Image 1 (cartoon, rainbow, N blue to C red):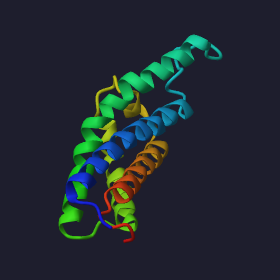
Image 2 (cartoon, helix red, strand yellow):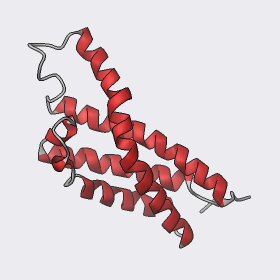
Image 3 (tube, rainbow, N blue to C red):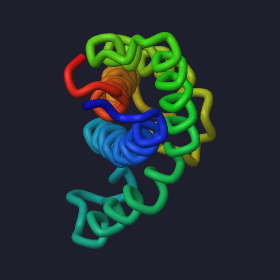
Amino acid sequence: MGLDSTTAFRRVFLGLLLACVINAGILVTATVLDGLQFQDAVGAPDWWDYVFLVFFYLFFSTPVIVPFVVPLGLLAWWLLHRWGMVKIWLTLILGLAVGYAISFVIPHLPDQLVASQLSSPLREIASTLAGGVTGLIVGWRGRLGVLD
């Protein structure tokens, strides 16, 4: 009982949208851990800073990540599907590698994106984790057979 490629494409696309939300959460958490998110707050952040953080996460960070994650994920799934190699372990390894490679592009993004100011080890860890999550979702949602 397998899936046809149109259904798998739909599943991968919706999974990649979920991956964008998770990736934005990982990068926003990294900016909080690095002290970049609340640098304007004097002392401890108040409730409005936390409300702004949630709005920043939902309405800015997630839409900014979508144009990067969705095309790369769909391209990777399409190539792997074409070669018959959509396996979770392979997509995880590819996702980790692409996430680590993207960590070197992040500092060249505009300064309006807070993630571009992340310190080196935290940026690489967060980007690699985000890539790994994307790889897992592509492998999990893009399988054509029930058991690979």
